[in-house]
Amino acid sequence: MGLVVNLRSRRKTAEDNSFTQMLFWADMTMWDAARVHALLASRREGFSLAQPFYVDESFHALDLDAVFMNDWLFALNACEIPQPGDYQTLEVGETSVVVLRDPHGEIKAFFNTCRHRGSRICMEPQGNVHRLVCPYHQWVYDLDGSLLHARQMPPDFERDGYGLAPVQLEVICGMVYICLADPSDPHSITPDLSRFRRAVTPYIAPHQPERTKVACSMTIVENANWKLVIENNRECYHCSGNHPELLATLVEFALPDDPHGSQDFRRLMDDKARQWDSLSLPHLPADGGNEFRCIRLPFHRGAVSFTADGSPACTKLLGELTEPDLGSVRMFRVPNNWNHFLSDHIMHFRILPLSANRTELRTTWLVHEDAVEGVDYDVETLTSVWRATNDQDARLAANNHLGIASKVYVPGPYAPSEFMLRNFTNWYADKLGAYVERASSKPRTIALQVSNG
Ligand code: FES
Ligand code: FE
Image (cartoon, rainbow, N blue to C red; front, side):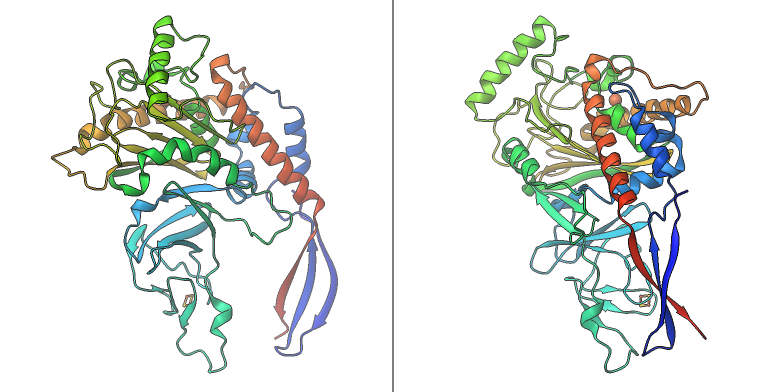
């Protein structure tokens, strides 16, 4: 453990008869910087990570700090909170966030923690409110986060200083991303989202996600570390042995010029490229480095959607689209989000780590806002392929986690088709390295109020 505490000064405050102790600490965390550095230094690129990264609770704590508190997280689609006052909550580790739509139609996010004595405010995963009222002592907040009422507080109580803490938020093609880092922190390692926004918008915008509604949303918990959930998602090496429903329509190659692609796949790709070019729909892989991926890939010939027989899952196509055979825009962004944008529906996948060996996966299916259930689509047909696929992937990831926990596990080599795992683990190692470097070199100061009774 790297806990370092030095008592530097002690002074009496004028107004409250308490002492302020100025404590300086270098690292007040569960993880050991030297151990993290050593493990990162011994990492072999192109191989899976060392065991502690996947199974050790101290690394779970480090991942929350270094990754989930210091990057942009997919939260939800704007269409999930369509009306003023609609909100949803999500938990990032112990930290709860409320994402809401204000009376002006703007989407905002706040830390779901009362400024009185810290109670959670919104206790339900979703709802609609005119105001945010803390259930403990009923402090009342406006939907812009400002404190409106604080009953029984003295007349000179300054409400202005007690608004809800805002969470950074960006909306990209209807997708709401939040960042829990402090934007005023000069040492922040939060990336700029503008490159991502510029790159993915031309692929996604034609599907008009802002004109969608939720057809189904489903949450499961996978018994695996979040990185194994991502790694499993980033390759289709496992598909032929495990995903019969998915492979009825999905082409398992990840690149248009995949060296393992058959002659038939290359002909299909050429045909589709010509068609999509004629429709001005981008399809070649975007340059997302290790941060994101965006590409349009076809389904098998004759299939247009993720259904058992490849027929449309929703007869009302998205936005103004008229051509059903648009393949799927596959978009992924570290650390917690992958998506499919089809002609007839959109799927968002969001993961959040619960512990070293448990990960929440939320899948949301969106259809055109005017599509009618039972007429244009039915939920069973729309969701059956990916419900089966999610269950299969959950088993694979859980088995992977169990095997990694064994004393004989050592990192193993990625296959060429697992190139996205190489990208992901390189990104992860860089992220962790930068965070640990910063945390180790930056003594911080806290003020601790101690009553002298
Ligand atoms: Fe919220 Fe007291 S903790 S009103
Ligand atoms: Fe899979």
